[in-house]
Structures are given as structure tokens and as C-alpha cells.
Image 1 (tube, one colour):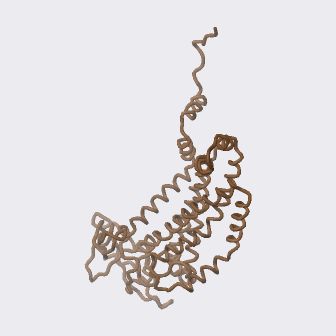
Image 2 (tube, helix red, strand yellow):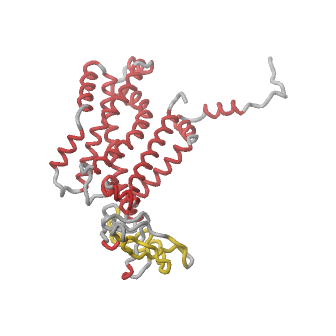
Image 3 (cartoon, rainbow, N blue to C red):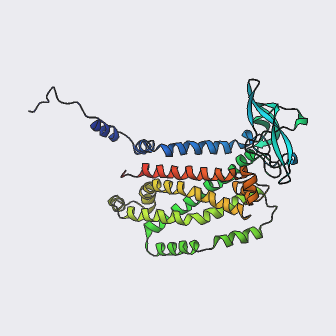
Length: 376
């Protein structure tokens, strides 16, 4: 009988790693691989912060996003200084620009106003049912001073751009998310049925998908924009655009799921389940959809930024959300002119928010794709 030598080398690090991997669940393995992609992890954290800021936008925003102030038209971003042991807003004075014949703002070093946390301001209804008037930060100044803190400047009607970007995130970030969720459900059901049953069912579904994909959706939105009244409530228009975006994107989900189900349908475990007397419903819910779910999640993460860009483009063209509703596409309407870009560059900040959100979503999807890949 063979014996193990006392001086046998200890277990290598590689062997211990394989032993650890064998004790982990599928989710733990995915999480372990995902953490190695630092860009994707940072993007996920950034997205969580953005969605939390959108969720608490009314509390974080210092002013009502639709509050018009003619005395602060195109006010530049405020200057924050350290004075009297805390942060303070440096005073501004209006000066007439003799070259462009417009009012500009110059700092007034002799005047400062302290910045406070949790100050009272314009009233709002938190989440639609909690009336409040507390804002996260604000300026302590006498009413006659009319001092306001504009972190990202003001637009042509003197509305705080920071407050408007936060409020616009509630529509722009969620409309893409919910639209993709609806399209994911529809695409998963239709794609699974098409790939699993095949035959004439597959042919009919695929021809229907091709018909929908060739439909001119810009013409559809133009017709809807012309038919709908301008006074239509914001909630109803929001729901309509969400449904239309879901109607546009479900076809690509269906094609993706169909391709996966076609490969799973011919697998040995599927044939064994059918031979054992399993019903179609059990095979689909036990083997088809769970196996394709990881791929569906990755495809959905890549589809969300596309839906956000679609809403932004439609609102920019006055075919989506309309004022007084606030979305990032609506905010970009003020930056259509060259004058806005050259003289008031802070009006392009909503574009930066769109780029940042889309980039984080793409990086998140890229990290999920690498982590979920079983051959990684």
C-alpha cells in the first residue's frame, strides 16, 4: 500500500483555487468574475447614485425646476467660497455687456451668503403623496437680496439647471428602464414560443417581427404627436411613450431569445425531460427560460441606453415629452442654437448626463456579459 511522504509539497495555490471554485454556486461564480471588471463595478455604483438622486430629486434640488426668475436669466454657475468657517455663496452683480448687448454676471467679492443644509424653500409633493418644503441645501440670505445658488447655472427663464437635470432624470432614466422591462417580458415569451415550437408558429412570428421592424417609427411618433392634445397630462404621455418604446424594442429581444432556445431545444437534458413525460410548460419554465435568463439580462442592460437615447431624441424633436414636463431631451431644446453653445455652455450639461448614463450602462452590460459567460 502506497504511503504519502512526510515531506510532500503542500497543496498549491492553483489547486486550492480549484477546490474553492467547486464549492461556489453559479451566482457566486458570476459575482466573483464580475468583481474583477473594475470599470463595470464603478459604473454600477455610479448608476446606483444616479438613480438614487433621481428618486430623491425633489429633496436634493434646491429650487422648483419650473420656477421662473426673470432676474437670473442665463445666470452662470455660482462661485462657492470659504467664508466665516463654512461654505458660502459669493454675491453676483449684473453688468450690461456692451459688445453683445446682454446682461452678464460678475462676482462681488464683498458679499457672501452662507450655505446651509436642510433649508426651507419652495413646497413640493414627495413621490406624489408627501407634501414637504425641505431642501437638502440652500442659501441663507434676506429676501430682498434674491440670492440663489446655481450649481450648474440657469436657463433663459432663470430656472435652476441643476434642479431641472435632477427632475429630468426621473423621466429619462426610468422611461428607458420600464420600456425595456416591458419589451423583455414580451420578447422572452414570444421568442421562447418561436424557438421551442418551431414550424408554422416560428414562421408566423418571424414574419410578424420582420413586419414590425420595417415600420417607420418616426412617422408613427409624428402622427401621435399631431393627434394628441398639448394639454395631455404628463403621466399619460409618459406611459404612452414607454409603451411605444417597448413596442419598438421587443422584436430584438425576441430574436435573441429564439436563438438561445433553438440551441437548448436540441440539448440532451431537454430530450430527457420530454421523454420523461414533462409538459411543454414545464420544459419551458424549467429549462428554456432559466438557461436563457442570463443572456436576456445582458441584452437588456445594453438596450436601456438605446431607449434613453430614443426618448431624448423624440423629446428634442418635440415628439416625446413636452414642457412643462422635464426630461433631458426637453432640456436640450435650449441648446439648439450656436449662441447657446458659445455664450452659455452650461446648457449642454444635460448632454453630459445622457453620455454618462449611457456609458455606465454599456460598461455594466459589458461586465455582466463577461461574468455570465460560462466559458470565461
